[in-house]
Image (tube, rainbow, N blue to C red; front, side):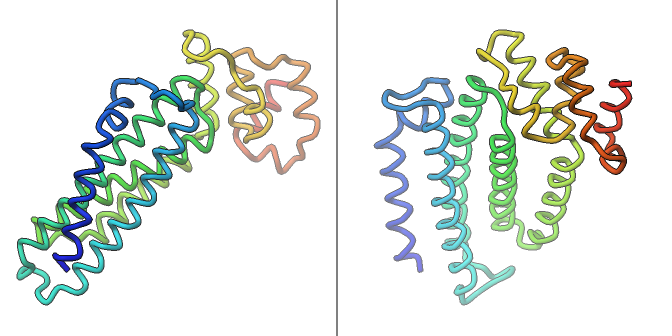
Length: 232
């Protein structure tokens, strides 16, 4: 197993040093030549997914096939697992930096928010794997489940569509982005529409027309109900 994993680690080291300018540029907010912000962010996420899946699979296979496990796990196995996790975390950091560059130029969308959420979740997973290598009684399944549930709850109850519109409006008004994409007001939930109305990007006439299509059951939603109240 060590013989099989060693070339992978060596290739990672060579790859990073041969592309060091490419990996450092997002931390300096520098867009490499030949890339658009969208292409740069997508390349970061797609590369991250391939590396994360590969490294996670290698770590699982190494630990599953190890003759000794638990408190008797060989130190070399912990070192190899640490190296794979450290490289994955480095790639996650570069992918997040690329996404931040993309967001700073064009604002937030649902897909960008979900992508950032997933990359942060991956960060916690690989950090916990590192902790597990040096603290053998660390219950990674338990603590990762807690983190996942907590992060999922935040994603569900933070009204992300409202946060997206509010953030984009602030970026636009402060001159960071060129325009606010109005399709976000109509193509997402009423959380976004309500936020746009409160900030003056939707007039009363459009609001009344929008609410007129809502049924009684739609108004059981908080944002839809507030839109109905404002339209009266």
